[in-house]
Length: 167
Image (cartoon, rainbow, N blue to C red; front, side):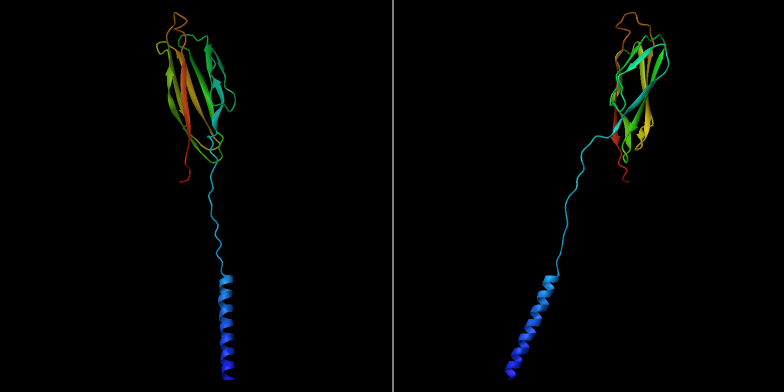
């Protein structure tokens, strides 16, 4: 009888031990979540909104449309010492990214003997949702004798670069 009691005690002890270990194994589980996220590549949303010209005797026409990335202007009927000033409004349509506006390709003038050209960026940092202006001037400085002397080609390329605002 004593053997039976010892055996029964041993079996009960083993069952309790097995249930305890089994319960511990079943009740403990690790769950892990991981992954990656990426952004869509896109260009900065900065463009020309409009252009305004000074009133002169010359006639100025533009190909600029709202939200354009470029403008081609034509100035006709300029007179000696007349300066045509064109003020471009540049807008940053981003909601949370500022932009720095800089010269990418230098201003060029194909006929510096007869024309002077210049430009000024009036506020190189464009805040998100903000605007700035770029002023371009063309001046006839010498009376041309031939048609070839009376024309110039002007070119300027600006770059709008995103600003890291994470600091």
